[in-house]
Image 1: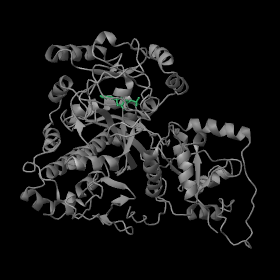
Image 2 (image 1 turned 120 degrees about the vertical axis):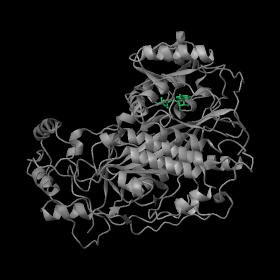
Image 3 (image 1 turned 180 degrees about the vertical axis):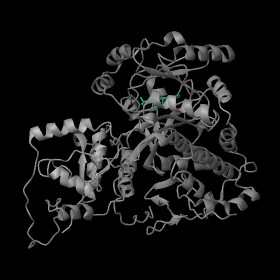
Image 4 (image 1 turned 90 degrees about the vertical axis):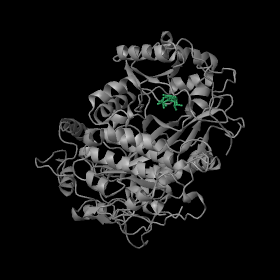
Length: 636
Ligand code: ADP
C-alpha cells in the first residue's frame, strides 16, 4: 500500500503545475479530506510566512526559500549589487545598468545625470520603473529629466539604448534558475528558456512606444503586430532558447562566452544574498533571470523574477514551461510514492496518508476518523504561530515529535535545542534524460505609428492615457495591479569609480569581465576566433549516468544534470569546498574568474594542460545545446 505524493497549490494555481503533477500521478491536496500535514509539495506564487517554514515536516517541500527578496525586488537588488560592487570591485559587478532608488537617491541621480549630460551630451537614456510593480506596468523611458515624474518609489536605471536586435526587433532572454539549496549553495540553470521580443521595430525616436522598447509578453500580446508575421521573428513575441542558439550558430557567433557570462551573472547575483538566506533544506526556488544582450554582445541583468510566469500563451511557452516544471519536480528528488510519510503515520498510529488507488481491490482501504481542527483551535494555532515568528526559521523539534504534538493539539511549540530537520531519505536521482537571419545592431528609425503612448510620465497619467489609446491593455493594467516581488540591477561609471576607490579588491573583478570580451560579436574572422570543436559536428552529448551521486573529499556532489537542468554551481572542487560551511565568496569569485579566463583562452596549450590536471569533479558547460563536460571541452 503506497502513499501517493500530494501537492498543494495556493489560490488554486498555477494551472501548469497542477497539470504536470497530475500527469505524474500526484494527487491534489483537499483540505476537507486530508490532514493538515498530508502533503509533499506546497506551491505558492507569493511568499510563505515564517511559521510555514517552522512547521515543515521531513516529507514536505516549499517552492520558495525564505528571504530572497534581496534579489527579487528591484530596489533591494540595486542596493545589494551596489554593496557587492563596493566590496568586490565594480568591474566584477558591472553586469547591471546603474540604478538609483528614488526618491532617496535623487541627489545622486542628479549628479550622475548632469555628469553624463556634460560628457556625452543628451543621448543618454533612462528607464523609470516602480519598485513594486511587474510585467512592464508603470514603466517609461526618458532622456530629459523634466520628463521624470513619479508618484511612488521607483528605480531609475540607465537605459541600454543599443540592444542587440534581430531584424530590428529588441529582445531579452528569460533564463530559468533553480536554487536547490543555499547552504551549501547549489544552483541549476535550465537549458531551455525563452526569448521575448518587442513587437514593433526599435527606434530611439519613439521612446513612448512600449511595443518597441519593452519585451514583456504581458504588454506585447496587446500590440497591433502581435499576430503579424514579423521578419525572422515570426508571429507572436517568443522564441525558445534552442531557436535562439540555432540563430546564433547560423551567424557564426561564439556562444560559449556569452553563456558563460550569463552563468557568471547568475552566480554573482545569488552570491549577494546567499550568506543571509536561512538554511532550509526542504525548499527549492525557481527564479526567472531577465537578461538583455547589447550590441557588443554583453549580457546585462535587468531583473530577477520571483515566481516567473507559468502561463501558456503560445507554443514556445508550452515547449519550455512544461518540461521546466517537470524537470524541477525531478530536481526535488521525490520518489514516486511517499514511504516516509506513510511510515511516520503508521509508526504513530495515525491515519494513513492518502493511498494509491492501484492497491488490490480486496485490500480494504482503512477509513480513519478525521481530526480536523475547530475554528477556535485554528485561531489559537495561528496566534501561537505568530508568536513563534522570532524563532530561527528552522525549528528544532524532531519531526515525529512534531506530528504527535500536532495530533494532540500541542503542536505549535518549539523545543529549545536547535537542530535542523532530519534529512529526507531520498532515492537516487533519476537518470538525466537522454532529451536564423540578419541581425541589425544599429538603431532603427522606422517611425512606426505609436499605438500606445505614455502621456506625462507618471504612473497615474499612464493609466489614463492607456485607457484612451489601448482599452484592452488598460483593462488588463487595471485588473493586474498587485504587489509583486521582482527586480532590477545596473552599471555605471561614476558610481563605479567611487566604489572602486572604496574597494581594495578589484583585480579579480576586472579580469573576470575583461577576458570574456574576446571573441564576442558577429561573424568573427575565422583566423581571430575559431569556433570550438563542439560546433564541428563531432561533439557528442554527454550521457550522464542517473545512478549514483558522487562524493569529493567526503562531500556530496549534486548531480551534474537533471533533465535539462544543468548544475552550474558548484562547478569544481574548490567551489564545492568554498560553499560547504561558511560561504567563501572570495574564493568562489576567483574560481569563476579562472574558469572564464580558461574559456576565453581555450586554445592556449598551457591552459589546457592546467585544466587536464587532477580535478576529480565533473561539470557541464551550461548553455550549449548538448553541454560538454568541462574536462572534455578543454581536451585538445
Ligand atoms: P518588470 O518587472 O515590470 O517586467 P523589467 O525590469 O523586467 O520590469 O523591465 C521590463 C522590460 O523593460 C524589460 O523586459 C526590458 O525589455 C525593458 N528594460 C528594462 N530595463 C531596461 C534597461 N535598463 N535597458 C533596456 N531595456 C530595459
